Length: 445
Image (cartoon, rainbow, N blue to C red; front, side, top):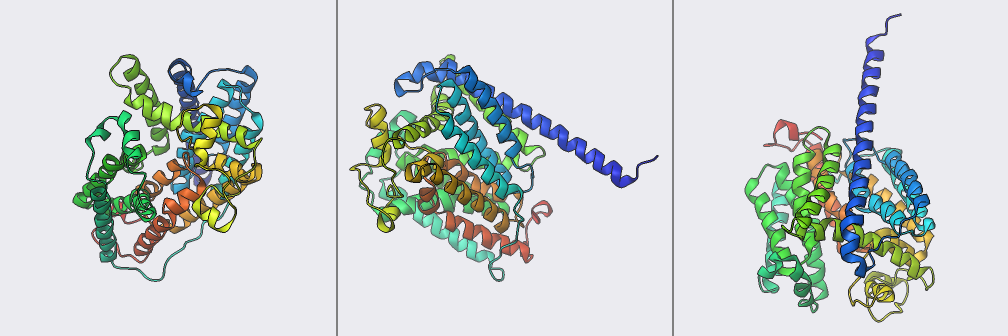
């Protein structure tokens, strides 16, 4: 019996998907092994004073691998949706370090299990909810986006000048905390402008200029973002420029998901060898230490602290205190939790799920998962006509910041509604065919 062409095509396509899924699984396994080795042999010996210790539990190691399989199964596989890549960034930066730290420090299983449930909820939104197209009226002129870029430029220059210009001390990561301490008197409105500029307008405008192939304005956007870092000392501002470049370059190519995982794996290996060979500690401090394991350690600290203290009930943010409940502490909660475990005087920021637990316990974590899942779905719906590098680049920084902030801060302070609105306007332009001057490969998503 001879199979028809459709059957042959389906079998061939299934083999390709299965092969790519196998390589994706192996890549993520290798990444997990690498960051665990870096933690055990470098991070823990150097930072045990910061409670990044090692207290392994073999039974929990087995459980962590079972959870890893669940994370892999939950990972969206559609390479044309931005939510697939946002989910992947959270997997690499938040969830795999979580299950790794869990067994390497014999941590509580209930918290980890609840976060896996959160992952499944987010995956449901990304994989099973039908995508709809959301547009804003008719198309707007591209001069409108040029006006937004002008406003962004003036706003960022104002913020840099207000700080006194760039500070060359920021060339050394060890000095950034001193720089931050010097602008604690920043007015509330200026604080919002700084975050909206760095977290919303920079991703939106650099994505727009990348879409329009305008190299000069694109370079200017990157210089302005680096200028903000050099003025205010936020390493995430600098990291966002690297992340955008990685996304713009890799997402244009085939097998982008596997290549992104490889970049993170190689980055940790390079960080290890640069450190042990005495060349530089900068990458080790930034990637495995500060980006991966400090936030995940703080996740468990928040869980332990609020398992025996009253929940915040959204009072940890200015908006929550205004509308919901009174804040009971005299300092930001990050300082309170950090002082509870070690008297360091530093601010122990953590990710969206542990902040959710701090607000309402396990229920708060599940609520956060529902909101994130909805936002991922909304991003898919509002960017469907944009090229993949543009829409992934615009929202990748937001996904990464969820490892170090509460959800309310990433949305309001981070200016997420502004970013979504601008990207929706760009999507509307492409839908109505106002893509003159775009290369053919960028004319469709």
